[in-house]
Structures are given as C-alpha cells and as structure tokens.
Amino acid sequence: MFRPSQRVAEIETFKVMDLLKRAKLLDSNGFDVVHMEVGEPDFGTAPAIAAAAKDAIDKGLTQYTPAAGIPQLREAISGWYKTKYNLDISPERIIVTTGASSALLMVFSLLTDAGESFMMADPGYPCNRQFLRFLEAKSQFVSVDAEQNFQLNASLVQQHWQQNTAGVLLASPANPTGAVVHRDEMSAIAQEVQQQDGALVVDELYHGLTYASDDYSVLEVDPNAFVVNSFSKYFGMTGWRLGWLVAPLDAAHELEKLAQNLMISPNTVSQYAALAAFEPATLEELEGRKQQFKLRRDLLVSGLRDLGFSIPVMPEGAFYVYAGAQHVTDNTFDYCWSLLEEDYIATTPGLDFGQHRSNEFIRFSYTTGLDRIELAVERLQKRIQG
Ligand SMILES: Cc1ncc(COP(=O)(O)O)c(C=O)c1O
Image (cartoon, rainbow, N blue to C red):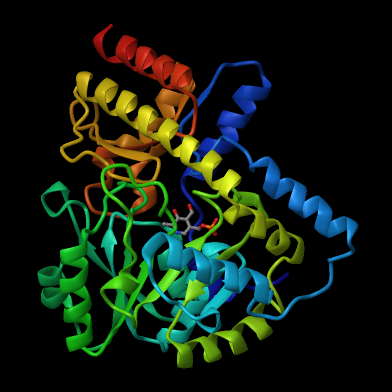
C-alpha cells in the first residue's frame, strides 16, 4: 500500500476527462459524436515539420541536447521574435521546454516560494492552479466577467494585490474565453506589477491565432516579463511536446539549471522538426489554417447566439467560445453530459475552468470542420427549439 503525498492527493483531475472517455466510447460504438471538447487543432502537423523529424531520425539525431535546447532552435525562435514582433531577443534568453506545460511549471518554480501566491483570472486554464499546488504555493483567483473582457486589468491587479502575491499570470488570447488583453491595458498591468515589485508572466501560447488585431508580445511593453509559448497550437504540434520560455537573462540562467535537473533536455527529434516550422512555406500553410479557424469561429458564434447562448464579447483569439447557457440550464456540468448522451455533442463544462459562475458556461472548441459545426448547431437547435 502506498500513501500519496498530501500534495499529489490534492491535485485534481480534469473534470472533462470522464466525458471525453465516454465520447470516445460512443465513437467506437458507431455514434456520430461532434467533438468540440478538445483543445487541439484538427489539422495535424504540417508535412514539412514531419519531414524534418524523419530526416533527424535518419541522421541519428536522437541524443540528449543542451538543457535549454539546440542552439539552432533558440536562434530560430529569436528570429521569430524579430520577424513577428520586431523585437531583439537574445537566444540566451530563450529556454526550449517540453511544451508550455513544463514552461509554466518551471516559471512558477522560479518565482514562487511555498506559501506565496500567483494572481490569475477565473475562468482560466485549469492546470495552473495544480502547478502552484504542487509547489506548495497558492492560486489567487480574481473573478472576471464579460464586463472586464474576461481578463484582469491594472485596477483589479492593484485591488487584489496581497503581501504574499509573487506575481500575476495572464494568458492572451485566453483559454477558455479567447479574450485578448490589449496593448494599453497590458502596459498598465505591467506598470502596476512593477510597482508592487512582483513578476509578470504572460502565456502567449495562442499567439498566431488572433483574428481581430495583430499579435503583440508583452515583451514590447515590458522587457522584463516572462513569456510562455509553445509549438502546440498555432504550429499544430500538440503531441510533439515542445514549447519555450523567454526570461530576463539572469533568470534564464536559473531556469537552465532547473531544466537540466527536471528534463535533462527537451525532445531532440521534436526540436529538429520545429526548425521547419519557421520556413516560409510552413508559415503560409499555418496562416491558411488560421483563416479556417476564423470562419469556424464566425459560424459557431452566430449559430450559438441565434439559439440564445450569451456571447457578449466576440472571442478574439484561440479556438474557443465560452458561451453562457443560463437560458437552458443552471447546471452546465449535467447539461454537457446530456448533450453528449442525447445529442452526441461533446463540449467542456465551465466547471473545469474555475468556480466563478462556472455552472452557467460551456466551452465549445472549434477544432472541427465547418460541416461538423453546422451539424452541432442543428442538433442544439432541435434540442432547444424542438
Ligand atoms: C492557456 C494554456 N496554457 C498552456 C497549455 C499547455 O499547452 P502545451 O503544453 O501543449 O504547450 C494549454 C493547453 O491547452 C493552454 O490552453
């Protein structure tokens, strides 16, 4: 018999996992489930990236790499900051990681001592609070609604800052809402965090999938911020487990030490594959996919609004719609289950993303084709309007 540590015992599962398991079972039993629960692009990895991986294997490039990543990839990411944001970021400030997931764990490890807290929005990406729990630190949730564009702002940061607050985490565009923090607000938040002598971490994982305005990086307004990013979403490489962190130079050295111990190195083949992600032909393909996502978003948002779902702010990025379902239920957890069992639509209940009014919301992912989105809306219409 083993006794799990208190730390691990308190880590929660994704609530949607059981729902996902059931959706997969329905699939294998021949039911036509529309999958709108997963947070990963359906397009697969671009062929040039896959070819670069095969090439790396053929060349025997399968040993450990430096802990912070192969120099070519750190340079390529640095080049990406120059072309995309016109920023000069030295490759030494870039640590290649095992997805944004390990980047988040590493940055929280660097910035929080036991008992300290990180401020973040509720609703938000669920794993963050588990990372902090794992580190004996705390999540300090600030409830946000459509009136705040589902994001923190400088005055909320000021209002909620406590003595044990180590810093603020923002995700822009955000999961589950697709909400973006605009440049002026980001700048005001950065100033507030600086004044409080805290750290600012921005998860830019959904950059590249912003539909209304051009992406800017927090590094344009605050060169000392920590940035989390990944090849998972825009670059379509979820299963390759590759991401990165940008940190101030002195912090990058600390993070490298941590990376050596926690990971030894990121996945070697994935790193060589990712070099092809920045090739012009690959980027052209990824831009085409982004246009597809935008069409899907527009179709889904208008379909859901017609059926009375509340989406007061157009989601500006990522591939999620966080829709208020108060007109059909006061318990979206149960409702999502019946949507799956009775109408074969798989979605994620708000409960996975926090406590704040989470029973009123459903997250729909538009990581499926236009025809499937149409089908889901039709099924919803039958359910709601008869
Ligand atoms: C906001 C956010 N951050 C981080 C992650 C982790 O991404 P990955 O580890 O695949 O890079 C996700 C995944 O969905 C996410 O939505």
